[in-house]
Structure formats: C-alpha cells, structure tokens
Image (cartoon, rainbow, N blue to C red; front, side, top):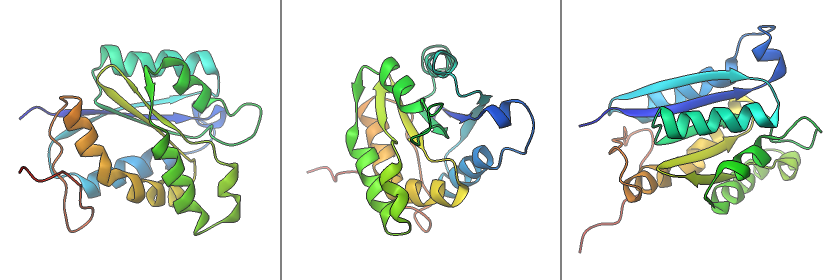
Length: 177
C-alpha cells in the first residue's frame, strides 16, 4: 500500500514571518492523525498571503510532490489580502463547489459570520485541493463535515486508499453491487 502524501499549507503573512506559532497547520495535522489509520506523510508549508505564491505552492504540491490531498488554511475571508480561493481556482482544472457549500452550512450552526467565508475546493490533476478557514475550532468542524467524502473522491482519482478510524470519522464509499 502506498503512503498518501498530503499537502498542508498555512497562508498567513504573520506565520510566514515567524511571528506566531502555526496552530492552524498543526490543527490540520492533528485532525488528520485522528482520522487516518493508513500511512500518510505531511508535506507542510507556511506561506504569505500572496496569490502568485499560493498558486506556485499548490502547483508544486500537486505536480511535483504528488500530494493526493492538499489542505489549505487561511486567506478565505473578505479582507483584500484573502486570496486563497482565487489562487485555488486559478490552478484547478475543475472546481468542487459542494465542499465550500457544506463547510459554510456547517459553520453557520456555530457562527452567523460563516457567510463571510469563501472556502472552496477543486481538482488539479490527481490532487484534491480543499480550502479551510484559519481558526483551529473551525478547521475541525469543517473537516468533520467534508472528510467523509474525501477518501472516495481520492479513490475516484486513482489515489492512495485512505483508511480511517471509523470511531472518529466514517468515510462514505458506495458498496459494490
């Protein structure tokens, strides 16, 4: 069984300048460690809120590091420097709008400002790219909502078979008929 490579990208000028500990990227790693029992390798990056840098990073993780899943955190709000969704759309072959729709619907259960979020997801080659918010609590809430579909999506793209701890998260895979 091949080891899944998962790109984890924190988009933040403060984090890239080393001004604070990257708790958002660590929250993604911790959540994936809770979810996955199959072997996986994080390919971790902290980058500034600059669209060209985000695009280059996503392309590199998808095309050169062969990450089957790339998860970003940060840069999804309405501020002028929040350009992660634009960078994601620029590098993807096809968009997967259901991910953003479900994450916003889930977040609305907790905060009315979820409507300000612009998370999205898309496919680049054999990679699924998913944008998450920047707060660790919101990261977990959003991943809890969308992750059940992610292993099957990666299956459909002929990626590595992700095995989950079903006591924590139950992936959906259609039963063979």
